[in-house]
Length: 190
Image 1 (cartoon, rainbow, N blue to C red):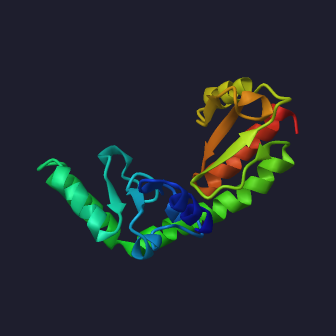
Image 2: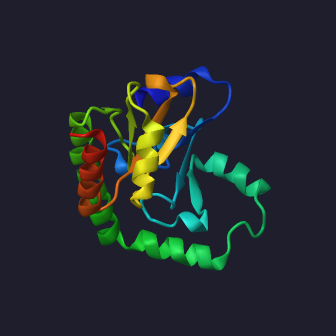
């Protein structure tokens, strides 16, 4: 939060903070908008609420900034079905709390398990874990998992550390995670 506030102070315009994964983190910036007029927080129903197909999101900002959005928004920028689905999802706090709690618990259990296999990981505050290992052919690992109907994302960007590529592993159920770890161990000969 302090870093976000410092960044906002240094900018001549409002700062937009993408909090797509905030529901999986310990901290967020939403309450900063109560104190400041120069921070806009965006959220989505795609991640924690499981409504990716709806493309439904929202903005949290000072009322003065919200009024500026209202002036330029399309009259029909959201359909009734999407609003109903999002409203129902938000209303089911028990499901939300249980689901995000399970994902966080599984994520926090999986990360050291992946490191035991030899992956380098990044502390995650999302519903996935980023894994790298410059000494391994990650594309081959990705393809071998894919052949076994285990789907992770293989991503390449030459400016990344550890060889410029990595695996983005989404958090599934505990059983799915155990199977993934077993298959990775077999592929790696561990």
